[in-house]
Length: 337
Image 1: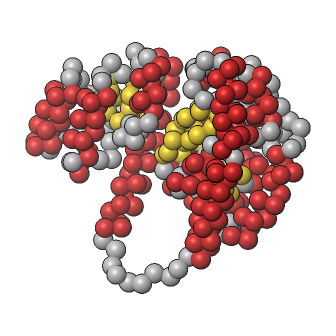
Image 2 (image 1 turned 90 degrees about the vertical axis):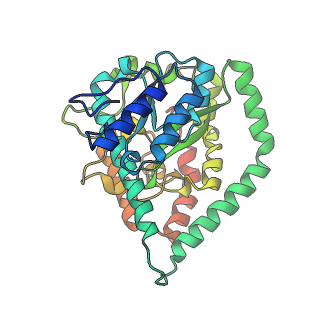
Image 3 (image 1 turned 180 degrees about the vertical axis):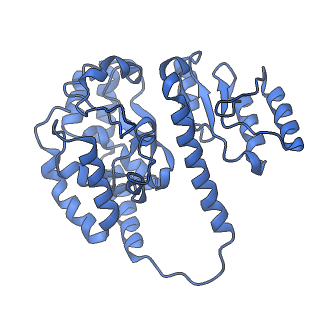
């Protein structure tokens, strides 16, 4: 437990941590800015800490981060599905950016808690029906549910092909930030070798987006990515790797049309007043970023965010239909990204 990062509290066990927190709350001391749990703790212990935190108003906005250096692959899969874990990091890999990520996670949790508080004090004044939202959500549910049923044979064939080509899970699951910085588990068919995320630093020089040292937006994407498998390349070029996102659409994490669901390390660079409006729109399977300049190496991070903000400003049901109608052409662009 650390207080960002002037001082901190260390506890060898979760029970010790709970005892320390209880004393801090009772005495009105400085609360930690983030909880860092060692990956060697079992899931039950971390769940115990999460339950304690959720029961104390003073702690609900504090992010819970898992340090992954000692976590086995099998354990990692379990931890990634835990809603009470806000992020999983390796201190060795992201030491210099850790403070920035914690600030971002605190901002997210503050927004979520504020929204919950506002909801609890709402009066019974009748609300105006948001017909655009009703139409959009109805379309999302009907298309996603129907597509998942009709495409189930294709899901099965792709799953078998992935398993035959390489060891590892069929799905790639990662934390993404959607509307209002809401974090959710994002699903895709796995197209890369195992532990591909750990090789990002090695490939930074190939990034098609320029990276500035001024604290601006940071996106990461490379052409002819060496981490991608042969079958994975086919899935990406045909956009079939994105089909599992229909699950996200069905459960409400995403919409058919919206802005790109960002990895947390990218979202963490877009929390300024200039860029944050892009989070006013939902995350989507397709959007302006898909149909305007998909995969073009000359597309800057600023251009991509401008498209996101443009969509957030003007999105409505008819605009979504227009984007959906133009998506097939963009999908079949010949670009190996």
